Length: 80
Image (cartoon, rainbow, N blue to C red; front, side):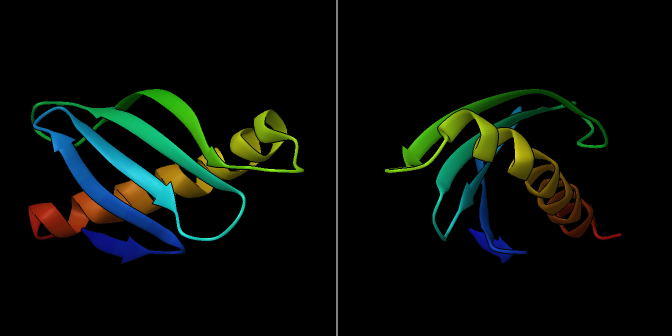
C-alpha cells in the first residue's frame, strides 16, 4: 500500500488497482489496468464515509485526482 496525493493506492488483483481517499469525503475508486500496466480502463466508485455530503458530486470531482495517483503508482511499480 502506497500513499500518493491523499490516496492510499494498492493492488486489488493483477488487473485492478484501488485508490482510497484518506480524508473525508472518503471514496474508494477501483481502476482496471491493462496487462502491461500502461493503460487505465474502467472506473468504479464506492462511497466509504460520505455523511452529510453529496456523494456522487464529490466522487466525480475527486476521480481525476484518484486516477492521477494511480498513474503515479503504476509508474513507480514499472520503475519509470
